[in-house]
Image 1 (cartoon, rainbow, N blue to C red):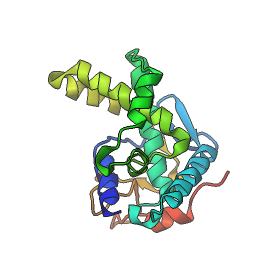
Image 2 (image 1 turned 120 degrees about the horizontal axis):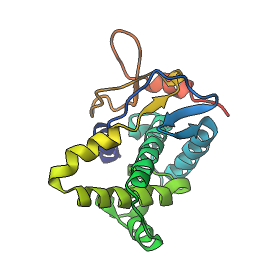
Image 3 (image 1 turned 30 degrees about the horizontal axis):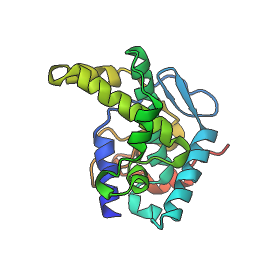
Image 4 (image 1 turned 90 degrees about the vertical axis):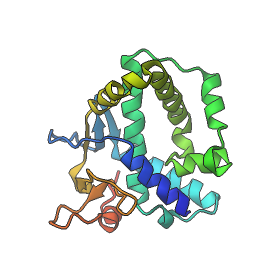
Amino acid sequence: MKSIRVAVAAAAVGIALTACSSPMQAGAAAVVGKERISTGQLNRDAEAYKAALKQNKLDETALGVPVSQYVLQRLADISAARQLMARNNVQVTDKEIDAKLQDPGQYQSPQINLLALGVAPSYAREYARTAVGMAKLQQQAGQAGLDKLRQDFASIKTTFNPRFGVVNTNPSQENPSLFVDAGRFGKATSQQAQQQQPQG
């Protein structure tokens, strides 16, 4: 599971999430661009993710961050990617999605690979669709256009419910949490986030 923890940090570092000060919609865990991630959806998907970890005999504490944070970050990434794909009219076929879902990745198992990426069975197809779509966008952009693509992705602002804490703007392997304590030491809020998981 240590390698999964590294994957968490890599995923956190690889994505630019911006916390905005705009009002949070009632019942929302996050608002990504024009899309809302409800606390109900987050709770359902976090439970599905926990069940999938248990089914595969994986310990959720080895993630290094609360499951709710891990799942919320992946849901936000998927939402932003979906919106960027729509902007660029990127289409993905069912055949391409099926092929992506069969990718064993570095864990030599498609299911374990998806779990390492923070993907529960409940949104595996949507993750695969956006992963293929983003790969197409990167290919179209070429090396010269990657910076512009990153800027376009980052322009889709994400607002998280403040009950989670303050967004960790410098995630690392040592501190991969999506949120940190608002206190002066900026420590990870793993324990707090577990206690403050949204209800409903």
